[in-house]
Image 1 (cartoon, rainbow, N blue to C red):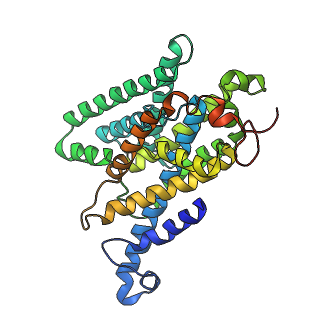
Image 2 (image 1 turned 90 degrees about the vertical axis):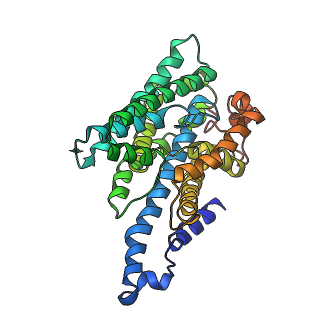
Image 3 (image 1 turned 30 degrees about the vertical axis):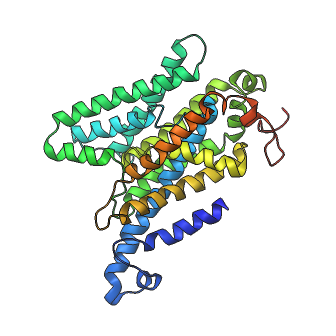
Length: 343
């Protein structure tokens, strides 16, 4: 069902907008050539970019929730998005064009600082005796505020044009033309996604606890470092192109668990499809709700994600939802152990 909904959203979304475009107009030349150009060079790349970004954020959120066994652990709440935003904002402020192996410097800067953010959060959490999810979330909030305050300081120091560019970019959006941003996204998202999909069995073991995972032969430190790298790669690439878009990584995995169960071999593909389609849907609302003006898509996701976040807190999932066998370690509806086997 999730796959069918995702396909329907992807196929229909490009036809909605200020300009009414039918399938025939998108394929014909001549008098409708302008609309065909709008369709193929503006709307289609935008839809693809939104789907890739949503899939990456949702997959990163699922990965963090499994690794930390906490439903509130996402790139947004753990400060990874703000770290990537700081890296991209710093690049904008310095204004030095840079390409490394064909990749834009803004994306590389966002990736580097997203890695620094997650390492800082994890280090602060480990600095205290034991491993507390509450400490982890507080550390994430603290790191988030730290990077946000530095971003505000850079905005204050920037001229009017750069300051406005930063503010608008921090709201998140897909004001792109052509396929170059899609290629930039894919260069970061595809390798990160492959790493996560190759580690689904390890994610199932993470949900049982690090001690049990180590007891089943998993190299916890190596896998954790690899997944940190993969999620930072994806989040850095997305934030550099689209800005920090929140709550996709929190909502998508939870909604998909209602349909697939907790086994990551089924949850991961569903999360990718739902996350991508959900962000495409939000972006379609953002560009049509008050057309011809456009709402930043980050505003739409925040309006939807805020109540969802409060629901998780009120429902008590932050304390027990993902930390015990009740959520992950039992048999899911597919009748298989979430640990990927009997060990």
